[in-house]
Length: 317
Image (cartoon, rainbow, N blue to C red; front, top):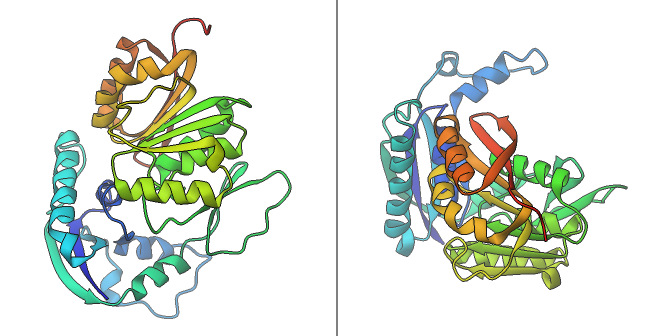
C-alpha cells in the first residue's frame, strides 16, 4: 500500500506545535526527528554510546516533523495542516522561532512505519490512570484504572503534555456520578478516563470523523460505551447537556471561540479544564473566560504548554 509523507522543517522549540497541528488532521501518526534529542542523550552519563555520527555532535536547529496520508487525501489534508501551522506561527507573534517551515512530500511504499511507531508506544502512567495501547497485554495493578487506546487513529495518547495535564487535573476535580463534557475529544482519552474514574455520563464531541470513529471504538473497547456519547459536531453545536466538569484540549484561539458557548454547558459552580495554551496566549484566554463568568482557580505548566482550571461563578442548583 502506498502512502504520501509530509515533512516539515522547523526548530526544536516549535516542533511540538507543528506536531500537534499534524495530529489534528493526520490519521496515521506523527514522527519528530530532532538531532538535539540525541545530543541530550549523549550528555547523559547513564547512557553509553558505542558509536555516534560526528555530524550529530553539534546543535542543529533543523527538526523534521513528519506525518502520512493515503495519496488520494494527501493534498487536502496537507493543505489543512500547513494552514494550521501558519496560524500557530502567527499566533505566537514572533515569540517562538518556527524555522523555515519548508515542506516536502514523497510517496512511500508499505506501512512498516506504523508497526515501528507502535513499538515505541508504551503504557503511560498518569497518577491513577494508566494509558495502554490496545495491542499490549498489560496487567492492571491494584488502585489503577486502565484506558485502552487504539491511538493510531486520532490524537490523544497521553504522551503529549497538554493531554497528560488534562488527565491529571481531571483526577483532582472529578466526583463520582459527575456529568462530563470533552470538547475536541480526539481519541476520547479524556472522556473515557472520566468514565473509568466514576463519571455518570460523558459527552464527547469532535469535528473530525476519524476522531469520532476512534473515540467510539475506544469507548467500546474500554467497556464504557453505555455512559459515553460521541458526537460529530463543531465544538458544542447542538449539545443539550450541562456538565459538572468540562474539558477542552484545543488551541488557544479555538478555546477563545468556545467561551460563549461553554458557559451555557457548565453548571453553576462547575469546573472547566482548558489545555493547549502557549504562554503568549495565556492572558487572552484568561480574560475571555473571566468575562464569560469563570474564575481561574489553578494554573499548570508542562514544557511550552499551560493548562487552566476554572470554576463557573454562581451557586449550583
